[in-house]
Picture 1 (cartoon, one colour):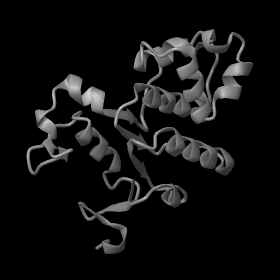
Picture 2 (picture 1 turned 60 degrees about the vertical axis):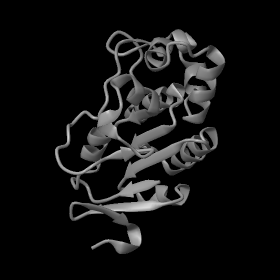
Picture 3 (picture 1 turned 180 degrees about the vertical axis):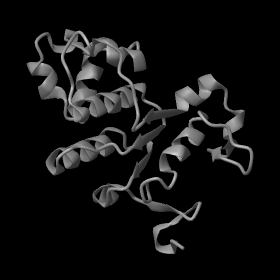
Length: 191
């Protein structure tokens, strides 16, 4: 499902509400018919993975960075996630592969590479819900297409909420909602 809307309309704030970074006082947010406030922190973490637009990657190896999200992920699972997010070739050419340091004391990542590493973390968590905030921002059209096709193919069982202002992502989603005027509505019913 895609959630689209103009910049600054509150799409990222919605992610913060869905992941309970912000409390909500009015109304209800339900997930699978259960009020989001009823989920324990642990259960929510097992249910939702968020690849946020604003993120921080710690200094460490590529492997360590991915293990922060999925401590038990083996090399085959990591390789599949990297392939899905179009980073496999980058890691193969990195000086020490998965053991290459990134960050202040290591290899500098481009914005697009860092964003895709965060997407790989979300995939490795293998939750039923993936919330992706501007997942292809800064990517060229070819990489954007391959990445989105890969994400959908890798997680056909997951509910994917793709928050974006890029209309090019809409064809990958089976439903589009628009955030406008403080409301979420089907694209054809935008006020």
